[in-house]
Length: 215
Image (cartoon, rainbow, N blue to C red; front, side, top):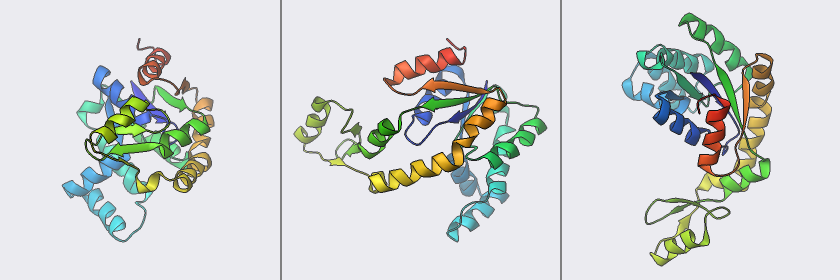
C-alpha cells in the first residue's frame, strides 16, 4: 500500500505512520530524515542540500523531490510506503506524480487525520518533557498522577521553546494556506480518505486500519 499522510502539525501523522510501518512492513518516508541522511551520506543531492542549509536558505523543491525519488526507487519501498510530510503544497503534489509513474508506482490513498483546531493547539502548546526521564507529557491530557510523579522524582516539566502559542499559530497558518488545498486535490483524484484523529492512539489506529481496509 502506498499512502500520503495529510494533517496539521500535532495531528498524529508520525505516530500512526510508525504503527502502520511496524505492523504491515510499510516504509515511513519523512523528508526531514531523508535530508539529514543524504547530507550525512555526502551524496550529490545531499551536498546541494547542505550548501543551501549552510547558507541559511530553504532546500529547494527539486532537491527534496530528487532525494524522495531516490528513496522510492529502493527495493524496500516496493512493498509499500507512507509519505509523511511530503507533499506540502499543490506544486509538490503535482511534481510527485511523474516521479511515481517513472518507477511504475501510484498512490493508493491520501489519508487526512482530521483534528479540531482547539485540540491541536492544546496538543502542541501543552507538550512537556520530564527533565529526569525524558518522558513526554501534556498538561491538558496527561493524568494528574503522571505529572505528580515527575515532581515526586525531583524532575521538572520542560516546555520546548518552539511550543509557544505564537509559533504554533504560525505553523498552523502555514498549514492552512499551503497544505490544506491538497485535501481537495486528492479528493478530486478519488484518493482522499478521512480519519478522525481525536481520542486514544489505539482508537485512532483502529479507525485508520478500518478506513484503509487493513483490519
